[in-house]
Amino acid sequence: MNWTTNFKNYLLAPTQGYILGLFRIVFGCFMVYEMLDYVQIDLVQNAFILPKIHLSYYSFLQPLPAPVLYAMLYTMLVCAGLIAVGWLFRPACFVFAAFYGYFLMLDKGIFNNHLYLFVLLAFVLGFTHADHFFSVKNIFGKEKMTSVKVPQWEVFILQLHFAIVYFYGGLAKINPDWLFRCEPVKTMLEIIPASHPLAFWLKNDFQAPLETYGGLAFDLVIPFMLWYKRTRWWALLPLLVFHLSNSLTFNDIGIFPFIMIFSTILFFEVEEIPFLRTMVTKGNQAKLHPTKILSSPIWVQKILVGYVIFQLLFPFRGLFLPNPVNWTMVANRFSWRMKSQSRLIDEFSYTIQEGQNGEKIPVKIEEFINPMQINAALHDPIAAADVAKGLAREGKVHGMAEPVVKANIRVRWNGYQPAFTVNPDTDLAKVEYSPFRKLDWVMPVPTE
Image 1 (tube, rainbow, N blue to C red):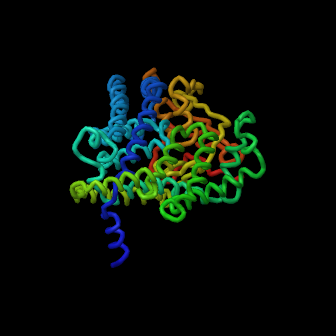
Image 2 (image 1 turned 90 degrees about the horizontal axis):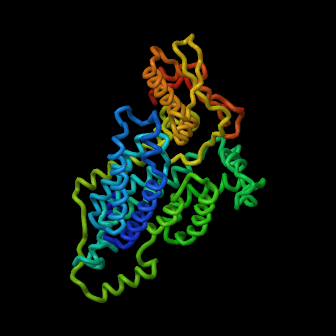
């Protein structure tokens, strides 16, 4: 048999689903926490209602009325709880993924790699039988966990998602700035305040090279250490140190490090976890009725094969496009390019005028967009142009016949000297964007 046949047999081989059930509980509980946080910060009000301009990925995607958005948010909260307990599991997963994905696509300011990961995990979980283990089905129903098994692919596809996050995050760091200038790590460490609890460890001459090359090695190696049984336990200590230190160092990654820590359970076998091993042994001794192998229709398997191929290939699209990813951010999102560049704001302002010869009027940008959107426009020239187009629409509402919008956005990118991201003399309200054409209104990549 060739390797493809062996791999297919491995994916279809029956296995205990206890690990799958435990991960479902952990993921569901974390999502409940995340949704409660959105309720507390009033995400709907601050992200979708108050801003006058929305940086959606597609023009047809606009916020629904406020009551509908709130209903969607609370539905996501309920769905997260249902995922955790394993009741109405499959519809809860798909509704959660659809609503969360909609929120994520409504505005570029919201995007974060870990939010994208949460959407994908919910979507994939919906195709598994994770609700047959440690769920209300086992408590109130007749089904016993020891009487069913699942195909190995249900665990593998979740393992693969976490492996992609690590490995592709490492690949994104293989560039001259990271390898030879320790950037953006050096800049990130420099802006950490002296009052930070880890300042003594983070602000020294050795930390930037250590985190630069150690982080790169960690991302590229850790998924294989987790997959290989002999190195699995050895991977836990560096994994804990890496994620806990990231949680203390960065204030924009929320629960992501903790989900990555708890996700390691997916890579362990039932026999390696004492209480699960005992549970299986007792079940076998009880001599229950024959084990049932749960399966999915062939059409589900074909969908997931296409889905996996897409997830493996889509992050590489930036290699074939004419604009440098780390500077223009074209093809940066949905590609696991985490902490691969830094931008410190030097100047951020917009002006609007009537025609090319009109008087330039400074825009109070905070009256139109929120801090998350400002950060998106600061990092992403396309988002900056979206803001300009929104300002032009506002100008027409207020009587301007031909509003011209220009921006002075200057940043210190990866430790280089301050440089404009977009041409300050260009009317950004009229620029066109295509990922397949060079963006001539974006300034050249800084080199000094």
